[in-house]
Image 1: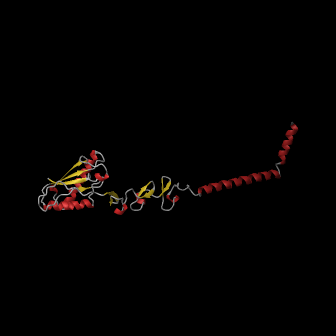
Image 2: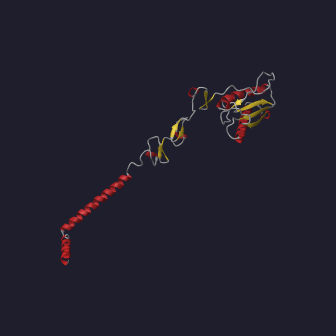
Image 3: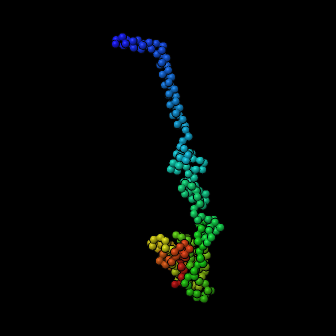
Length: 243
């Protein structure tokens, strides 16, 4: 046993010369190569291509004209990023349903109003006004778009005629009654009908009709009789009647 132990010590001692130095050199060379490879990998990672499209961290990770939104490249962030008339829906600029620029863009039976295809309004029904013989004019009912109290061009034409008729007949009292179609809550429609009536009152006053001659109220959806879009257009109105 002692002889074998001495033999191993002799073998180890023989590596303490030039051979041992060569071994150390090879080990050191491998370590340097490993360090070079490690630093190269880190440098490549820091200078790499970034997230894989369409994933992103910043707008510059996306194609030209795109935006980084919640880690994904998209055409738009909101409607401001889209061309006129289009809306940002699901990160893409799209034409909203029913959008139009003229009547030719709408299906048969519809017309373009405020860039929306809507059912053509039927002829405005005559209000229950009494013809006093002073020129034979009658007060006209005014119609509105869905969920709106805005006086559109067709409503302005009717109100212009109403203002002339009120002056021509020298009417002392005219009442404006706001109506709505049946969609929406009762409370909301009462308020909407009131806004419509007051919009008409304000417009007539700008045409020279004295506000003291005008009064306004709302019945909301109480008198609505329509069952579809075509008939609902007749429910959204302000009736103009002599008192």
